[in-house]
Amino acid sequence: MFTGLVQGLGTVAAVEPTADGARLRIETDLAAELAPGDSIAVNGVCLTAVDPSAGAFSADAINETLRRSSLADVGPGSAVNLELAMRAGDRLGGHIMQGHVDGVGTISEIAQDGFSRVVTIAAPAELLRYVVEKGSIAIDGVSLTVSAVDDDSLSVSLIPETLERTILGAAEVGKPVNLEVDVLAKYVEKLVGAHR
Image 1 (tube, helix red, strand yellow):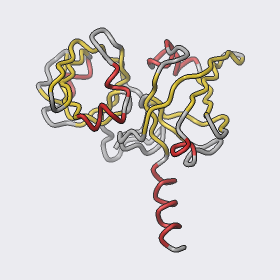
Image 2 (spheres, rainbow, N blue to C red; image 1 turned 180 degrees about the horizontal axis):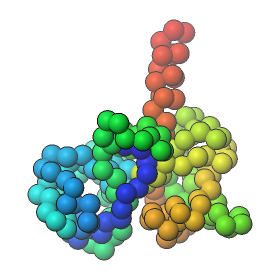
Image 3 (cartoon, rainbow, N blue to C red; image 1 turned 180 degrees about the vertical axis):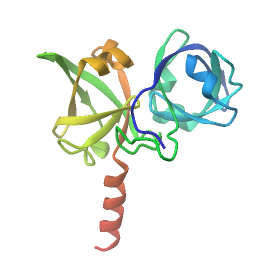
Image 4 (cartoon, one colour; image 1 turned 135 degrees about the vertical axis):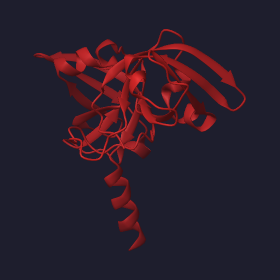
């Protein structure tokens, strides 16, 4: 489980494509806190740490992960958001996230609004049905509040802290982003549907 509070940035040092997916090598100071087999969210995608050292770790992304997330687009030099798995007893400052990305959206518009930056993301209708104004969504692993939603897109307002501490601060129009909708909405839909 994750909270969507990014703990650090990493840099992709290498990507080794294979028939089964790809192995990513990511440089980060957070690697010192990882043991082999630990979960870590990379741009919101829950991956398993392999060969962690003081300054880097590797993780395998299977083909399913590459198809459903924007990790297929990262390469050497790409910056990534990182979050270690939540420990029991930690504060839940963001919202409950699983690291199971539901799909990819594309940044369609960026506008300043005072000291915040409003980012609009075009997203598939099958994901937008779970998105509500003032609800939670994870974008590249960052827990955010939805400021607006319509049939084609959603918007979030990014505060200076988010712009400074995450890769969203450098995001540009056209960038693909990982989206994880609120898991509670998916469970409610399934439970209500079962009783129709």
